[in-house]
Image (tube, rainbow, N blue to C red; front, side, top):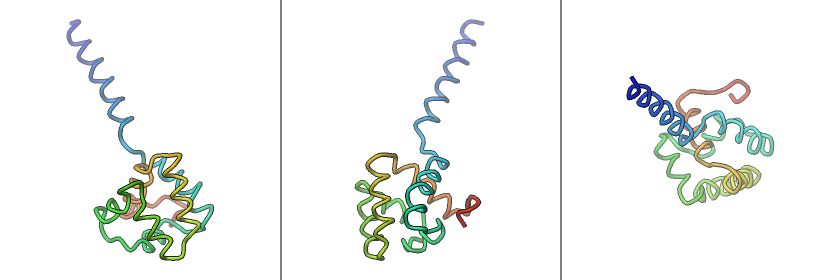
Length: 115
């Protein structure tokens, strides 16, 4: 009886730590809305089109090296405000959350007000 309780408690504790380690789509949406959309007025599907990516793997490649390829691509497209916003997210927040949000957008998970 005690062993089963210990096992269940361990499983619950493990699930909390595993959930905290994953990136969060909702936090990515918050970062996108607060920094990128508010500053540059680019909706998320337009942002994906500006980046010119077709697959999630291409998008993940842009987030390598603290999102420097992403920032360079935005600057080359003349979207300096969006590039500055991504730099701010990179310094103060988790880029993985923003990456997961944009992958969700690519997969059709577009929240109200972003499409």
